[in-house]
Image (cartoon, rainbow over all chains, first blue to last red; front, side, top):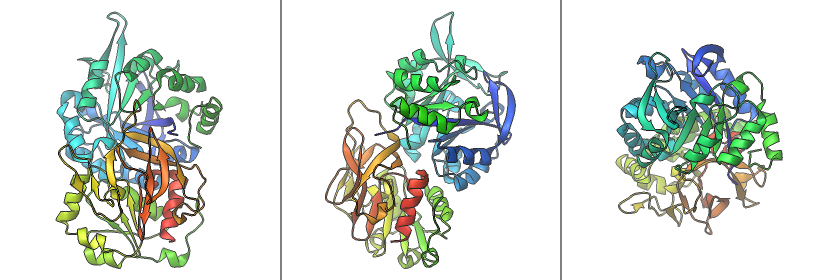
Amino acid sequence: MLARRIIPCLDVKDGKVVKGVKFRNHEIIGDIVPLAEQYALQGADELVFYDITASSDQRVVDKSWVTRIAQVIDIPFCVAGGIKTVEDAGKILEMGADKISVNSPALADPELITRLHDTYGQQCVVVGIDSFYNEETGKYQVHQYTGDESRTQVTAWQTADWVKEVQQRGAGEIVLNCMNQDGVRQGYDIAQLAAIRTACSVPLIASGGAGEKIHFKDVFEQADVDGALAASVFHKGIIPIPELKTYLREQKIAIRD
Amino acid sequence: MNDIIDLAKKQQKIVIVNTGCANISSVKFAVERLGVQVNVSDDVNVIQKADKVFLPGVGSANAAMASIQQKQLVTSIQGLTQPVLGICLGMQLMVESSEESLTDSTPCLNLILGQVKRMQVGDLRLPHMGWNTVTASSDAPLFKGLDANSYFYFVHSFAVGVSDFTLAKCHYGMDFSAAIHKDNFFGVQFHPERSSDAGAQLLKNFIQL
């Protein structure tokens, strides 16, 4: 049986793993490679590295850490942040990443998804989507450049429409960051994830809001997502991964041994 | 993590065929983690002299076959007599043909009978992405020391059906070959280089064949 995935997300800024609350006030968690190695040993099913500075400040970012991670860990990992061209993606994949994730650059140039699909195949093209629930309009809106508060902007896309668009262009997986829930540990945005699930025929990964073990159970059972991504609960040791996996197995959720 | 590979086995010449695909460094690093030296090459002489050969691949069958043809490696790979392990797309290239092309089917290396077809999984999601259990023939040396339902990491939308050449099965909406074997040619649909301890054990088993 296909297992549901537990995915620690490591936000990378200036070569360090950081975590902010609602995408702000980043604090340093630690060095990338030892943290990655530790998560692989603890039973993480996959890792995601988001270089959160890259898209917003237009730097060419040093990604040599990708190779160092590929050398030490034996689980799949995805790299996101600042990938604007097929060449950028190719370099990351050559360094040993299994997948690349595009977010703001795909919004700026949706054709990028098509080109990535055609060059490297659907299996490595992940699209990250930052989605914010606007209580005034009652709509889920896609945001861009969320790595830098001063540049963050609302796009014209409603989330479900963008999800359909990226699948048509060849996305192999979607990570939905529910911004209202990010970093506040009150649970995943089940309503939004369940709504998006119906529009999504590729694997869907939930992101934003994990605070307790039951949140993982709820998101797998109620939103039928393929994986659950979390950062602070893992980085701060609030939920040890082996304990989480044991708990989920007890709840009859398919989890890798 | 793994017990150490015999010294004699460590001194083998291990070659990864440079198919021009993207997951080559992952495979290289995984073999190196076992303490074994490995070369990446598209030189016919180097490949022919190897004790063990890896045929990695991700992406599309027609792009990979075009790359292998352009490097003039088709007949030399077909003529190999030492153990060869195809990984993911590398496994799919070992059968007769692949329909992973919108226009027509791509002829592959034709080492093992079988066709690569798009998976029919009903309401389930494609790609089949993540960790899935694999059921292997109990006597398969490639799966020696692995539990009956070990998890391996998969990422694919196309697969080879179950046949007499199936060494291990996987189920995702349908049964398909997780591993195939004929003579000296072995192929795995999953990514042992990204399958934690189980994957490392399988790579070790291959190197020790």
